Image (cartoon, rainbow, N blue to C red; front, side):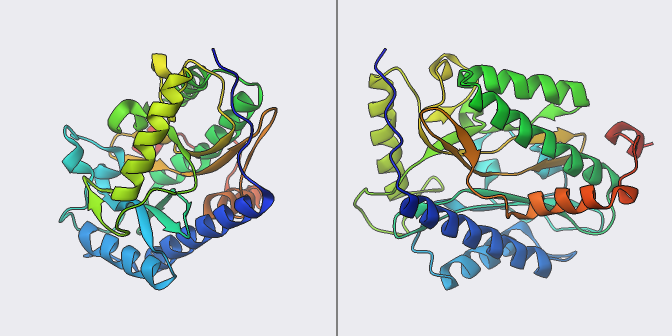
Length: 295
């Protein structure tokens, strides 16, 4: 098997990727502050797109997505078309997930933002437990475990929590994918099957190149992912569910030849976990499980 490539990005590149990721999360937070009962998924994605374009986004890795209610857990999803925003209206107590992947000057981010409207104790429990997966993935990648084994470790943790794996519903069962600088030519802002034309060109090139070296830019649990993490940037999105509630985060993981770290810790879900840790009385030891929250 060919030797893995060296880390392809400079400090300047990482700063630009970080800026794009911050921009994406900032727009998601703006939509989260605006969202209320009665809003549809289509309205939420339109609002998210307007915010992103207004902030300078020139193209999209994929179109913005919004999922409400049981659709956050991909219940009854059977075709790729069901991932696109629909007419589902947000109701009091519902969870939601916003997902967007903006491109600015060729630098790409791919983020997932989970939230709720009103009270939802199951969502609270899942949101707190999601931190475990961020720490687990980083530890496993730093240990240079093959990507399919990291996927299996996440599966085992999901089972231990009593949840179910929802990223397995994504096309290809992916928990993540490589992100690179978009260099493909073609019209910006034009989408095909939900992905930008430039995205499809770049992904096609990367798939061919990586497969020739026994690697894959798509991170799943199959044979193609039986290799150590490839140096570069990976958009990672562990997605967990319990009954009608689903939640995920998605952010960029930096993988070097001998280390790994999350590109940025100043993100909404990380700030939420840190705030909870600093006020332990708000999340007491022995807090109810998601199963107990439904009783």
